Image 1: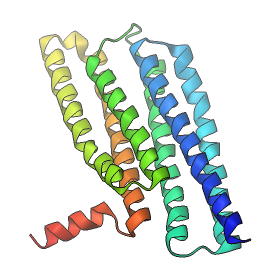
Image 2: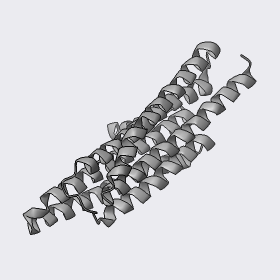
Image 3: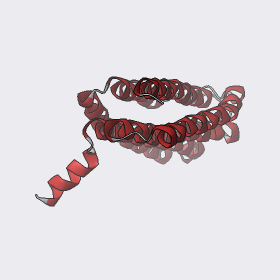
Length: 224
């Protein structure tokens, strides 16, 4: 396998990662939509389509293993392949969280549309965050990758705001407990997605520099 073929194979798996990212974001948007609209048909579709995401992860991983076995890439090329394997693992977990949100819809005892603007705000923010994470990967943009990593704090604040609002909602009227609890769980799954996307940013920095942001943070704290 020549260098040209190696780079063609790497570009192929990079494009696969972008496609998988789109599948995961679509699943996340559909899962939240199904919850807010009490759309159980859409929720079932999200659950069923999770298998497609799982298969996509396995296909990309097999391609990466094949590249490593046949070409034995080194240095930056090896870091790229290892980063791809890490990123698709994060994306698969985003798909899992979407499936869990859809499961809440299917098992919901509220059985009516839910109005919650904070969930929409979190979802919109996550969509931009994931898009930028994937762009930073594809374009080797370290600055953007670091920015994505740091945006996780915004989602944490939004989730805390959501949690406090739902606790107040329950205190006002205990009959709201079921609805509020379901909203909290959906928000928590979105917050976990933010953690995963931030981790993608961290891995992209590793791919570019050979160092992770988390290692830099640890070193900084160690010498404080």
